[in-house]
Length: 193
Image 1 (cartoon, rainbow, N blue to C red):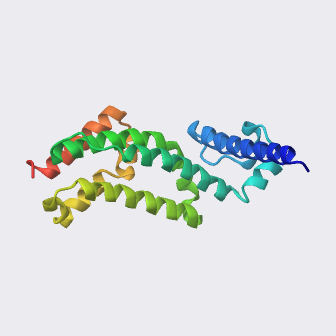
Image 2 (cartoon, one colour):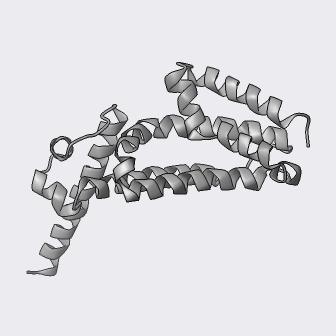
Image 3 (tube, rainbow, N blue to C red):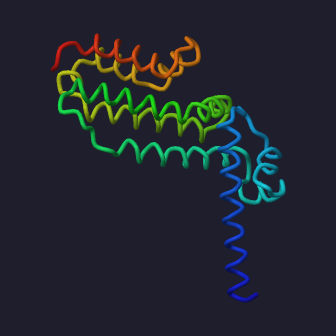
């Protein structure tokens, strides 16, 4: 086999893998909670065997999907805060998380169905919760970090689970959910520390 044939085969393989991941992301974004390998193959325009040649099982495809979304969220989280005070930064954090949670919501719903039986998805869930907590730890003043009850309450209010409750269970729009969180967080943090 010539180097050109090998390079062409490798490029086609990379393209197929990228189309499979994109298909999984698109199906999930459209509301499919548990897309099948067949649905992914059809959407990607590849054969079912190609899906399993690239991904040994659906869990590995979910992990790849998680990694793509996580990279997007980490880039957004790396942006410096504009607010000069703690109050301004925590209210900005609500805005940032609201935007990010809206992006990940369909993927979280799909992953939550599989998480109890998936060590990889359990680990991904724990990693996200820890990353979100670390951001809060980084921006919170020492007085808030030292007040365990208040810090834990803030971590809860700023979690995906709180956002999901407001959006999915209570039926709030994104602006209404942001306002509810801002109200609760403002009441909790009190005057500027």
